[in-house]
Length: 269
Image (tube, rainbow, N blue to C red; front, side, top):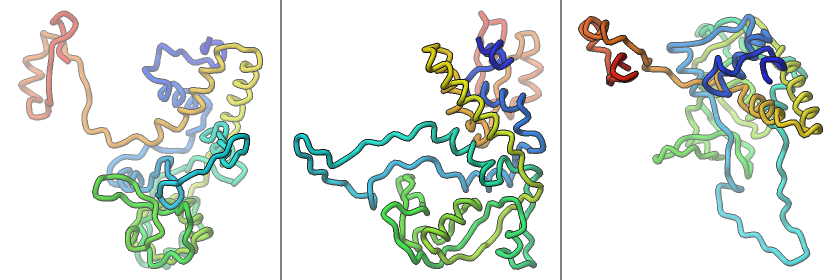
């Protein structure tokens, strides 16, 4: 029972991601942090890159197999999303506190950003001096597919966060210029690390006991980041009583996308 285990009522949420978000709020993991909207949200959204699925150099691989001899080992890492959140505290980081601030134009941007907590920038990639079989930078091709590449021309203009940029410099020795971006300089809320670690430990405990509640813990752990990366919300759903529908329609008709009867015709969705 999650109400007894975590003091949270599953009936108050419509998805596991919403439940996980509510739990993190209760644990004060977002204290000092802000929800972001408008231009800053749209800019930062462009720096998000999901998990990749690719073979070496984006090419098909031919694997030779002989009976009783292993040439390929299938490895499945455990709890990648939760472990990454736990590592934030080890790295002296967490959820960025404060609000995003535009990087000033009249400063040396690279020097300026050395003294901030984190940043999201648009850069011009001048050169990628170390090529990798699994490159770090990516772009969208004509079909809308994200492609990871060593070709600097394909990623000439790229949106990237500070962690990915530091990795690109360290592992691929890229040469770049910062065009514009946002920075945060109010430190981190790192309560997420201890919270996730406790949830993980609880899951292991119940898994050993063969208690099915461990599956719920697993879902929460793998959904704990979901509500922090929402796309732009451009519409809302409202339920209007039949008696108020005419006045509502007359007042907001320019904003209504569609409407239909529900609840046996007593309400309009």
